[in-house]
Image 1 (cartoon, rainbow, N blue to C red):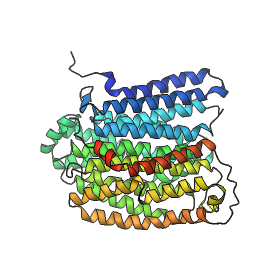
Image 2 (cartoon, rainbow, N blue to C red):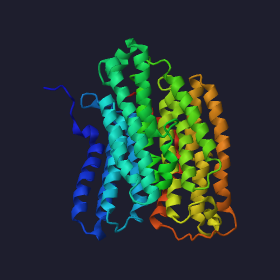
Image 3 (cartoon, rainbow, N blue to C red):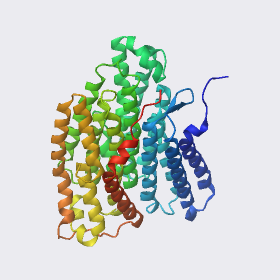
Length: 472
């Protein structure tokens, strides 16, 4: 008898995704090039099934699986739904450009594996599983960044890999030190043992662990890969890199602050608050004068991580922190994916000037872009507005008013570079580029924009289901 609660149904969404990835890889070896879309359908089916399974699991009390290494609670459930929904979106953005590509099936498999790694990060309650999730979320993403094998893609993949490998080593070193300090890797044990651990050992181990998770989240100072990797990737991959790994990493950070490091690392809130302030400020400053739309969105996502880190900083110190983080994660994911869907729908429009006159030729697409960009600012009634409001309330509740004030200043400042994109989009001029576009991406853009608005209008009921205790 092992005493482990090994119930596969507890991780049914993860099993569906892994099984679909393996089966898709086998099918891709036998299907003709014209029928590789079957693998995309299989991946989408697994994602839909995973969302349904996660919704069913949300009705049960919080629990743990496999020797308490994986938790099933509101944080995991929300992350599952958002990550799998994001996976569906990325598949929708890729299906048009990749149709009949020789490596079409491999792309869909890599997307599923990267998403599976993000799911593991979100639910991990053991440092060893956290490390495994980090690797699984990273390695497929490196391949996806350079998937088209051109110069920018190769450079993006190389920079992404080098930074990830370096910070991954730091993360593993930090895990080793925390294991030595806490005499275990399970979060419940660490929450007790780390209280009496040597302060220096605990601090160095925590910083090493934080380095790896900050890399996956794209937070300062581990953000250097973000602009180059996003600019050099295809729009669908860029959408994945700036969304799915961040959700898993931020959920993992929240769980670390709320369980093993709660009470044992007094400087944890201040450390995360400083990273939040640096991320939102440096991300905004770097985005001010960008001309490339993907690079602008890359720096935008760095700044958004700063806002998302606000409730993480006050994990366990404010009753609003969990609701704020989970709602903001969903709001950011759908709004950011909507912006990238517009970019994917206009593959020839690479710079801000290329969007001039879009409102006259593609009014619905222009409206989607404007709503998503204003949504990223935090304009009502979009979902990000409620997310930011909840985040501000959480840090005020935990006596971090200075962070809320800085975030408000950064929010106003960010309007500048979003308007630099909105103004040419709504102008009457004509762009030298053609607005032919990709139809599936346009459909995804409309759907994500509508979801952002609906999520903002239905904030009350959604926030009510995001509360609940973490699994211990």
